[in-house]
Length: 112
Image (cartoon, rainbow, N blue to C red; front, side):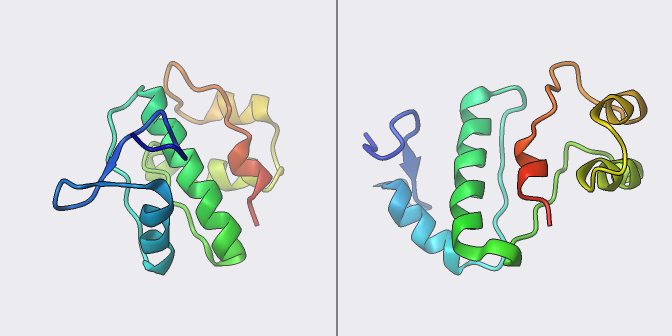
């Protein structure tokens, strides 16, 4: 079991268990990283956050995130929220959000 991210066991494409550190070494070299997930799975969401944080530490402003959970016609309202042009209350009122949306502030924390 992974000692550095113990809530998760990571496997490579050949089915061999690998460490978080080894996975991140590979991801840091990649131009793009895609996450597949089970919606409403807090462990998967936690791992996505951990990977994003680690990539941000390595790439700083050379990191772009795409959020497939937001519909494309919500892009303007999302941009306004992230740039603090509108409040969280306005964002929640105007955007089509899912039932368990809690207003993840981590996106705003690192938005450039």
